[in-house]
Image 1 (tube, rainbow, N blue to C red):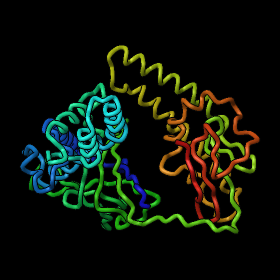
Image 2 (image 1 turned 90 degrees about the vertical axis):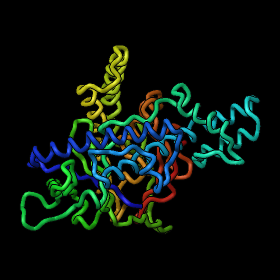
Image 3 (image 1 turned 180 degrees about the vertical axis):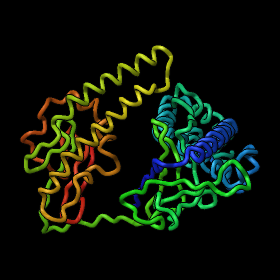
Image 4 (image 1 turned 45 degrees about the horizontal axis):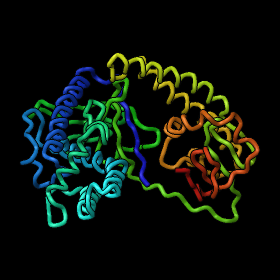
Length: 387
């Protein structure tokens, strides 16, 4: 398992350099949008590497390497969107159409083959009629929802050919610097100072590829992948264990009877109701983009969950025996904020204190609870989750 690390801009970064990065992002996003639209218009899930330069429109503003990365980005966006829609919606639609007798078995097999393997061209097993029918469903917003939306928040891919992370020794402003190619061809790369990540000490500890994007508030964030491989050791049978149940009415309930974070839900409910009402009001007025006020309220929701969760789990960690794992690891694959918000609607119907007095088992999580795990001295084991 590898971890993503986030780097932010140094507060004393030169505004002129930031303007150059903003200009590059605008051109990159426009070209990315054109590439995605071209793939959808041509009914293509993927484009082979050797065919991309001829298939996609050229870019006069971007360098060849940046345009190459934008084309790769477009292929990843369309392929991910199509694969997700097949697994979530179209696979069920094919089964329903076959069960209702609207399509025969060969057509059903062909449609499943297209969705599962992202088939672009007709063959003996996949006729052109099946391709046309599948794409008519995939592009119908009444069936699958919106098409891929390209905005400034999609980010900008950077490789070692277009950007380099370095730690120069001749400056004391910042220990991390990003040198990136820009729109002015033939000129040296622009150097941007970055605020380092406390979990990464050296630029050689992260990948050479960088994803540069802006958050809701317009702040730049640079995402890298840590090179170090994280391995979760298997717990030993003779070590003590404790069940950790991450819930909604209380954020954390342990098998020894402790209830942590019971004060969060009322505050979260009050702010969440304001967000829902404000968003519904904007939609009635035909305003589908978030306002600064709505974005700030959403950010407060996430911050509220993170602050409460860490404030409760860090003290509980100190009370555990030495070398016990961090309780946050009881939520595999998601952050506390994501888990809490996804389970919010389901949990609002649960009576307060529903966890109290219940025994926690790693093999039989409580109905209505989200994630269950067992912590030992060497890591998380026997973790299960409700569907």
